[in-house]
Image (tube, rainbow, N blue to C red):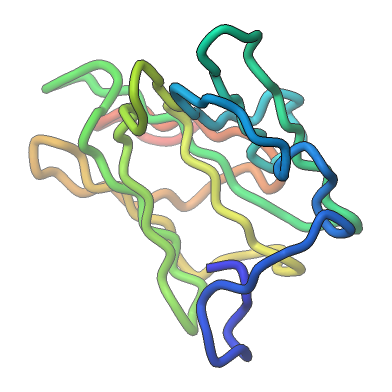
Amino acid sequence: MNAGPEQPTEFVCVGSDKCGTDLFQPILGRGAAYADIDADGDLDLILTQNGGPPLLLRNELNGRAHYLRFKLVGTRHNRDAIGGVVEVDLGDRVLRRRVMPTRSYLSQVELPLTFGLGKRTAVKRVTVHWPGGATQTIAHYRLDGLTIVVEGRPEM
């Protein structure tokens, strides 16, 4: 959803004047993955192509937006917490992300989950639903940084 809640549609076509010309160059693509390559809180895109080098498209936001990132460490079922879900309750809506690194042909996205907050500097609640069924509430998180959450351990 790139249009925002005020728009009548979920997606709006964005021209090269807003996102650069690289996205408009035809390639014989073979895979795509995202990660926060430059650790600035926005997700960058990596495209692989047949017969050509990989392409890194860095996401450079204009203006300052806040974010949360969570790296889940499982202790009971799987160490990478694959299948785990993080819910961020903003008060007026809930954002959900699942740890599921497979996304595209021969591609894997990063394990940490990123939540864009816009101008918000706090959230109502953060809840982790672990793959084995346990639930954990996270009271302390790092705004504009990475919070590591270990299954079943109290926060530091």
